[in-house]
Length: 174
Image: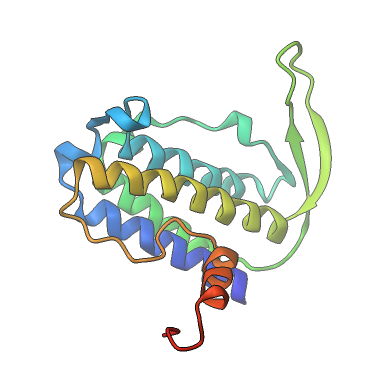
């Protein structure tokens, strides 16, 4: 399935960054990122996938109730193990089953709404969310870890890549 392959590609790209970044740079504050760290953005991204993985069996996904596991954002090896586990899970689980998304977008109350969704729609959301954070990670890597060579399309949506390719004059297309 193409969506599962896209998920695996995203996780592989994240694993590449985690493998290549020095331990001290993984948890180093990045001034341009409002002093957040590469590790925090990796953790945040992975926790959305973890939430989908861990809660899809119950049928209710609530991204607001993530663990915010500080070990993932400071321990590269744990982050890599987490990425591996997620890759194995999503490769083996591609059945599109109905789910409910529990969400609350109000500051004034804690009442959640249940929104009809499904596994593949939430996986697509996780991929888009990951690409967004990968764009942020790219900024941080360029600032504090320029020794890492990121793939050219790291943090760029497939639709943007296709749009950019179509805008190139036919004589310069690769």
